Length: 423
Image (cartoon, rainbow, N blue to C red; front, side, top):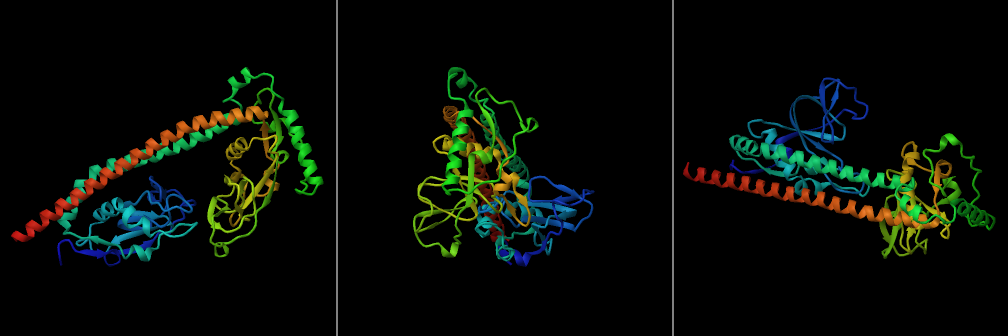
C-alpha cells in the first residue's frame, strides 16, 4: 500500500448513529456528545471506544449549510441522536485523533457541501462514507496530530470566542429594541419636543379607521379584546405614550398557497415563513407589506416585502394604519415582541390571531416612532460594524489554520517520499 494512499471513510470506519435524546437525557457520570461546543452528561453510555462524532444536521439551522463542530471522544460516552460516531475499524491503520484533526479542519471543503435540504438541512451518511482521506502510516498520523494539537486547541477556543461574541451582538440588538419600545432611547428627543400629539389621540384614530374597514368588509371583525389590567403592564410608560393590545393596531390574514413545484419562472419574490423562498411570475400584493411567519420553525419571524411579491399561506400579511403607524417602527416593534414565543407547540409551531391579538403593547406618537427608528438604525450600524469585525477575525483565523495544515501535510508528505526513496 502506498504510504499516502487515499481511502474512503466507509472502508476505514464503522458508522454508528447516536441513540440518546439530548433534551431529555438524565444527567449522570458519562459524557454526552452533542452538536454544541460543550459536553452534557448522561446516566448511561452507548460507546466505549475512540471515535469522531459528526453532527448530521446543519449548525446554522433551517435553510443554511454549516458545520461548527466535529468532536473527538474516547472511553465510555453517550451520543445524541442527531450525530453519528465514526470508529476506526483498525487502529493500526487509522488513528481516531488523526481522523478528527483532518475532518475538522477540512469540514468546509469535504463535509458541508454534502449537506442537502431546502429547509431542514441534513447530512447524508452514505455520502460521508464516500469521502476519501489520505492515510499515511500510523507514526506519521501521530506526528501530524501532535504537531497540530496545540494549534488546534487555540483554534477551537478562538472559534468558541467568535461564536460567543456573535451571540452577544444578537443580544445587544434585542436589548436596543427593548429600550426603544420602552422609550429609553428617545428620552432626550421627548425633552426637546414636549408638544407632540399624545398617542391616545393616535390610537383613537387607528381604532376608528379599523372599525370603518370592518364596516366596509375589507378586514374581518375580531372578538372584543379585554381591558388592560394594571398588573399586565411590564413597565412605566413615558409621558404621552399609551398602552393597547396588538389587536387594536393590526389585523392579520394568511397568504395564498403556492408550493415550489407550482412556481413559474419569474422575478417576483415568494415569501414564506422565513422570507424569500423562491420566485414566481405572478404576485398577490402590489404594495410593501409586513409579513409574519405563521407556521413552522420560523413561526413569528417578521419580514418586509418589496412592492410586488407573492405572500404564501406559511405567513400572515399584516394590515395596519399606514397613516398613523410608521412602517419601519412597526417592523422593529414586531421583531422585538418575538411573536414566535406565542406559538402553539404541537406537531409544528403555529401562531394565530387568537394568540397574538391579546398581547399588550405600547404606542408612542407618530413623530416619536420616526425618532425611534432613526436612533435604532444608528445603533444597529455600530452592531453591524462589530459583527463584520468579528466575522473578519474568524475568516483570518480560518485562513491561517488552513495555511498551517497545508504546510504540515505537504511537508510531512515530502519527507515521507524522501524516506521512501532512500529505503
